[in-house]
Length: 372
Ligand code: GDP
Ligand code: MN
Image (cartoon, rainbow, N blue to C red; front, side, top):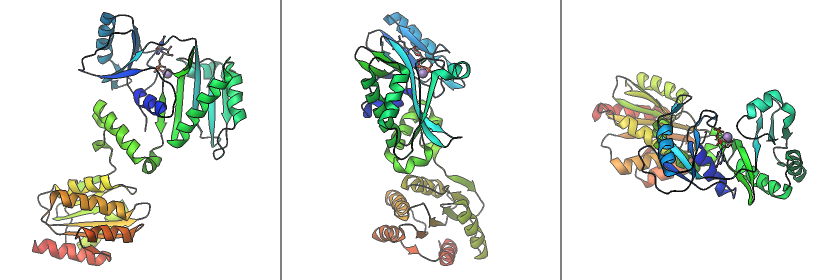
């Protein structure tokens, strides 16, 4: 999950990394405050500086004109819907710093260059010697000498402060399971090192470890680009069919199997709805809402096979939906696998029956659809 600069910087600050002070300004917002500002278009692509999407303003009229100009821009296909207005910072020196993975060498690494600023790709092409690539052990993390080596390579006169900055960046990278944290430019100011830009990419596969963080980031992104919001981001596949038995499964294979079984038992599915394997209470809840929205439904069959998926979480999603909407049609749930006992208990506590046999669940769904 790629983050907007303002999100990356907020994450940085939560790990004690200094950034300039800024305010996010959405399209249509009235902008207050009159200080010299740097206005920066918030898009997920890079190269904003070169594209004229980072503008320094010395006065209010300049700032208003710049805001207008930025909100009219589209950068690499992304319309500008938000602008970060930051206090101007005096730049003594721009460095490049990042922590990422080298896929080919299969190792995490630190990247650093004293030729920071806008064109790190060009530096990499023309002067590879100006970029330090320092692999480190993925379990031990970078050791003190790695950090000191980076400081020496960059030639800063304040190596201790740089080492402290790097340690914070590494902690942020590790604790959020980032695949990339890039600070370009990292600037040296009289009061220390400041991240003037933040490019953060979090590992989507680590979402289960950081559910709240991902949900918050996605909510924020949805207010800037609706395509990035929660609603568009679930992993639900929904295909409407002709029958009257609603079907939800946690994976495609289980769904196909259950479709066949429904047919064998003389029933017909109203849809094929699967949640894409690894899922969450929120997705279970959304799947319920999606399928129950079909007025033709006469019963609902939920078939869950917990591998990575946790049955207590699935039960939570089902129970939440049932409590909120008190549906009238029969609901048949079959769950098994990871945290099965906990899942069953949550269902029982909510007075919802559970079947532990798949064929029997299918049978009940078919006969109750005929009767309801
Ligand atoms: P990118 O081109 O998308 O990576 O955007 P950056 O956030 O890195 O900004 C591009 C360039 O704008 C930086 O390298 C700086 O030279 C300049 N810049 C950004 N913020 C400031 C600021 O507060 N003061 C000054 N003087 N320059 C800035
Ligand atoms: Mn940058």
